[in-house]
Image (spheres, helix red, strand yellow):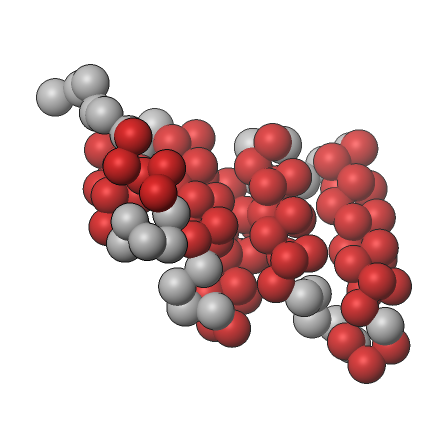
Amino acid sequence: MLSGAPTRGALVLRRVARADAGPEAGPRLPCRSAVDLGKVLLEFGAWDEADAQVELILGREPKNSQALTIRAGSLLGRGKAQEAVALLQAVSPGSNPEVDRIEPTFS
């Protein structure tokens, strides 16, 4: 769980996302806001919370390449570089052309 300022930052981002989405959005973040929150959580090193956002996004958009990128960032943060690269390489080139430029340099 996050502590201190990161928690406040994540809560503020959630409130802003809900306000942008309007009252009909209820407690669910729109995918775009969930992606933004996932990125912020990665910056704070909140791997579990970032993964939770990924699950929410993929539940609505199963091929969302940004969500997969967040998951890869979470894996990297946990020291699982090979898994992160494998995940990114599995993304179809049409959905995320940046993946083609990744060249793993570890064994």
